[in-house]
Image 1: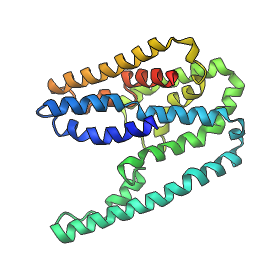
Image 2 (image 1 turned 45 degrees about the vertical axis):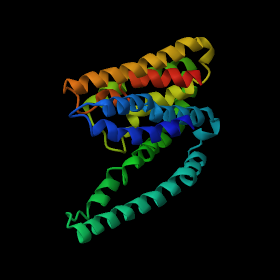
Image 3 (image 1 turned 90 degrees about the horizontal axis):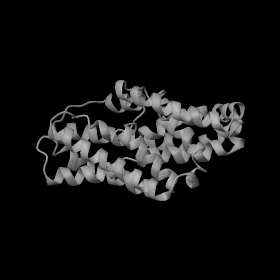
Image 4 (image 1 turned 45 degrees about the horizontal axis):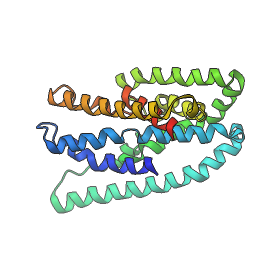
Length: 248
């Protein structure tokens, strides 16, 4: 539920950030604060997904797992993708007929091919890749053991940072940069007692504060129009996500 609320917060605060970047004001500061606080939402969803999927030994059966996920995720995704494409066509054609805007009939189809028939659905198309590799990951976990699987998650996380920074992956391969979160969601599920709760909360607060202050500095110095520190695989979003995940 918390992650759901944070997704909504991002979409509300985003306008305050992007509309005030050229002339940062109080509105930008407020938007940046809530946006920085909410950046853990997508990582938390992936961590939870990895926990649930990789903990269930039945999911290593390809036929069982893929049929289950097609019914739970595949069918709704097809329906909603179709509805959003229809909505995009209606808005496109209405804009052309009523306001003389440029007619772009291929844009909705192109967006579908790129794995985001509407901007927020990118996550579901990325999730398909994680679903596909889940049975493989469970078998790897059984072969290499829990400790090595945990190290694999750490390795994937570190590798994902430069990949996400230097490249924009096509949706069919986008899941690769989220493998670290997915694996660690499983491997960290029983780690709460190892780290003191006060340390976890302090780590989350300081990581979030660093995202906030570094974004503020970079924007005011006109150095970061891409808002790098908001990235789901930027260092302080990663640390904030892992700290709060372990805490809960």
